[in-house]
Every structure is written in structure tokens, then in C-alpha cells.
Amino acid sequence: MAKKRPAFYHFLGCVTPHRYPSVERATNLVFEDLDMDLLDMVGATCCPAPGVFGSFDRVTWASIAARNLTIAEQGGHPITTGCNGCFASLFDSNYELKHDEELRKAVNENLAEIGREFKGSIEVTHYVDALFDTAGLSKIRKHVTHPLKGVRMALHPGCHWLRPSAIKKKDNSERPHIFRELCETSGATYVPYKDELICCGAGGAVRTADLEVSLRFTKQKFESIIAAGGADMIVTPCPFCLLQLDLGQVEISKLFGVDFNFDILHVSELLALAFGHSPNEFGLATHLQYLQRKSQPNWGRLGIET
Amino acid sequence: MTTTEEKPAIDIDDVDLEFIEIIKKTGGPNIHNCYQCGTCSGSCPAGALTNFLVRNTIRKALLGLKEEVISSPDLWYCTTCYACTDRCPQDVKPTDVIKAIRNIAVAEGYMLGSHQKVAAKVVEAAHAVPLDKESWQNLRVKVGLEPVPPNASGNPWAVDEIRKITKKSGFEKLIGYREFVKAQKEKAKKKAEEKKAQKKE
Image 1 (cartoon, rainbow over the protein chains, first blue to last red):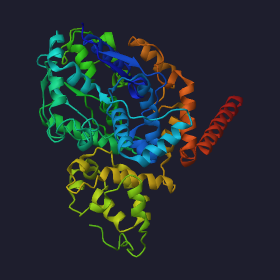
Image 2: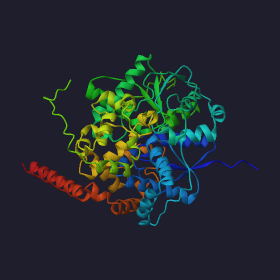
Image 3: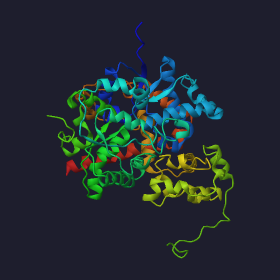
């Protein structure tokens, strides 16, 4: 009997489907290549943003997150998401609701209003988990037909897939290796830099509260990459970090008068390229920095012939 | 260095000891574990870039300086990266403490206008970053996707469910949603009238 294909409920969130659809398209291509099904979550909403709504009202945050979880509970498959923020809201609320009776009671009272109930019957994963644990690196390597040889790759793992590590239990948050190993299957060369593990600056409602302060984090990251000898691209597993690093370069130019020229790729886009999909097949050139600057990805630096 | 002439010393007599209990109930149960080692502030990227100090916030909270803590604009510079939480030797979970204090600040009326706006978007569209322009739909088509994703953007019933939740939980009232919508409408009306007047001239 053929092995059953893994299936995940695909939680899109806001930034991927509404601002960076190339990430959604690249994810569909990569998961299809790896024989993993992505199921629509019809009527899913904002996760809602953990640092934003969690900072305003914890019970409302957990209630909206739990409503999203109930959509997957009805179908009985785990969730996967390609956003660190969505992952944090869904994973953390799933965890907290299983461990905090009082919170669960308050949340289920809110959900009763719409005929739903949190049961705690499904798991929440990130694309990184689906790719690393479910598909596995050896299977991924078999699909790499167009290795990005000689392309220098800096990584921005972001925060909420890893931390808080006592709850996430994914990787060593001081010396993580899983995201790096996943990205290295693309054939690109990993460039370490001092500030790899600091936040992009967008989280915790800081980007909304004070754009300039949030961009100081981003700028510090870029300067740290340059101090390490520079990179041809930066890869991240999160569309909100992607937005901050990608569109952030346009905003940094305006606010600080300093120009950076990094191509920022979501890990799904990196793998789509390595699997031999052309950048036009998923729309790499639609990233907001290119649309706003009326520019193109640095095709030569990415090793792509145009 | 800031002298007391430039910035008066905090009056430690003006304390609200109930504040600590509310923090514990609102998501920061371990705040009492703190022995002020400062590992949190030393790990904090926001601390390196702004005046925000996690240790300082927690110490002030433990002293019961509620007003001082919840009214501070620095409170909103934490990006919730959880670096402090991973390193705290006392399991204080400083990020959760900060979030709990923010919940209290919002309940007491200290909410930034920009935050009110993003909160209102979720109540209104069920997405903090909504599919609010045709150009975003066109971008989706350009990369080979359906113009509207299967989330709440194409499913008004899902938005209704969020409205019911946020009404029941008191969130609508908390963020002043009705007043916000009313003010937005008046602003749009005024703008339209001004435009009309300009055209006449």
C-alpha cells in the first residue's frame, strides 16, 4: 500500500496572502513537489498578531486564535503556517489553553457565542517543521535540481518559531541549527553574522507604534551582515520579518538616508528556486521593495540567468 | 547622567500593591521571582536602541509604582522577541510580564492611536493587514493565485464571527471601536466637503 500523503491545514495569515503572495505561490509549489497536501482553512482570520493583540487583551487574543484552531479541529489535520507571528499565536494559544483552565473557560465562553468550542485536539506546526520533520532533508535534497552554488546567504530565523524555547522545544535558541540546515539544502553558502538572532524590529506592535525605532533594529542587522563580509541574499521563515527587511530598506533610505540593496527571500521561495522553478513562476519580482523602487532582484548575484 | 534636578526622584510612598496581583492574574504569574540580576536588559535588543529597560520596569512594578509603569511610552518598545525569557535564570518570563502590564495599561486608557487603528482593523475586516485594495488582488493574480484567498477576506460570515467574539469579550468597548468608527466617518465626510468646496472655487 502506498504511504499516505501528509496533509496540513494551511494557515495563511495576513501578510503572505495580502502583501507577499509570491510566498503563498512558492509554498504551494514546494509542498506539491514534496508530496504534502495543503488544505484550505475557509474563513480563517488574523491569527491575531501575538505581540499586538496579546499586548492589548490576552483573553481576546486567545479567543480569536482559538477560533482559528477550531477550524482545523473540525477536519482533524494539523495546521502549518509560514509566518512566525501566526505560528506564535496559534502554537502559544494552543499550549496555554491546554495548560490554563481559567483562560480556557473564558475563551470557550466567547466561542460559545458563535457555536464553537476549543477542544485541544490538533497540533500547530511551522513550514520549517513540515519541511524538516515531515518531508525531511534527504527528500528535499533529492528535489534540488538547481543548487544556488556560490550564492552567499545570510539568515534571519526571527523569534517566534524558536522562542520561548521552554514552550516551543524546537531548537537551541542560542545556537540553532535546524533552519540553517534546511536553507543549506539549497546549495547556497551560509554566512554567519553577529546579530543573526536578534529581532527584525517589527514585532510586539513596535512597527505600528514607532516605525523609526523598529527600523533601527533592521538597520543594525544589515550593518552586522556587512561587517561580516556581506551577503547576496537574506533568507527568513516569516513574511512579517520579510516585509520589515524588504520594504524596510525603502523606508530606511527615506528615514536615515542610508541605502541597502539586499534581496530578501522567504524559505519557501529559496526552495522553489532550488527545486528548479523559475522566479516568474511564483513572482519573486513582486516583493514590495522592487515594486516601490521600480527595480528587479539582483538576478546575477542570485545566480539566475534572465 | 540624569540628576534629580533634571528629573525629580520617584515618590516611593505612592504605591499600589494590588498592581502586582493584577499582573500575576493577567499573564505574568512569576514576577515575584525577580532578583534584579539584569540578564533581561542585557539580552534586550530594544534596550540597546531605546530607553526601555526590562529590569527597571519589573522593579518598578514590584514596588507598586503602577502609574509610573503603565504610563511610560518605553513600555511599547519591547518587540516580544523573548530573548530575556529564554535567558532569565529565575523563570520570571519577563516578556509575559511586559505583555500583562501592557494589558493593564490599555485597560486604564493608555493605548496609542496607531494601535487603536490596527485593533479596529481586525474588528472590521478580521485581518490586521487586510486585502483592502484592488491592487493587492491583482498582485495575487500576477503570481498565479486566485484574487481572493480562502480566509476571511472572501468570507463575510467569518468577519461576523469576529465581531461577535470581540463584542462578547469587551474588546470593542476596550478599544473604543464605535467612537473610532464614528470619528473616521466624520473625518471622511469633512474631507469630502473640503474637496467639494475646492472644486467650486
